[in-house]
Length: 235
Image (cartoon, rainbow, N blue to C red; front, side):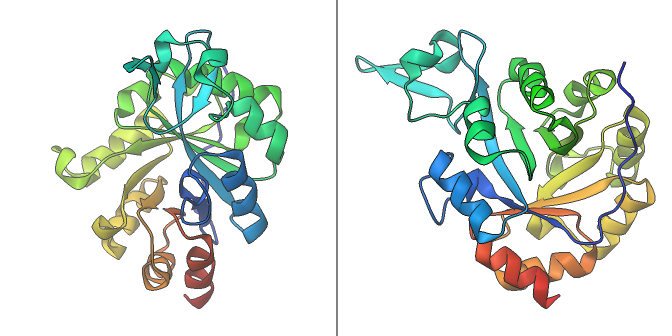
């Protein structure tokens, strides 16, 4: 069992470049990741699937076309997927570890290999694992110090936000990730009352980043790194 510290509300939000900041370079590429960090992003966001030979692959769709056939990464080896799609090891090799990394776990089987790779390079404490089923995340709690984030929408929280916040706290799931348009100051205060982190995605404009910062949002994802920076600075 690993020792996990409860999350603390952050004085300034983590600025995650969504898919490496896809407004500036091809998404989920090493070029995009490196450029986003150079521009001042404090975090990178990506998607992960597991290849047939157990490599965490950074790509949104998780499929490759071979001879006019669509094949899932789970049935294709890393070498056959091709060098255009980086692995998590490639990302750390190219960009180092001095940033927060938010990983949208598209394939639940990829979660533990992602944790193992982050741990290997000493970056597990800066890893954020996002998944739409918080019970999947809860099953990982005793095995990782990574931040575990429930990626959802208000309409999917049938029991209501307060009960969800209490359940996440009891299970050791660190935070909740909602579309930016669903966040309000009151909702952020509710999750903070349960000491859960508040994460927003689809933050594409300075005014939205500024408003979320004033609400106390702990992290945000957007395609435009410069807008995230300007918006949080203006809050």
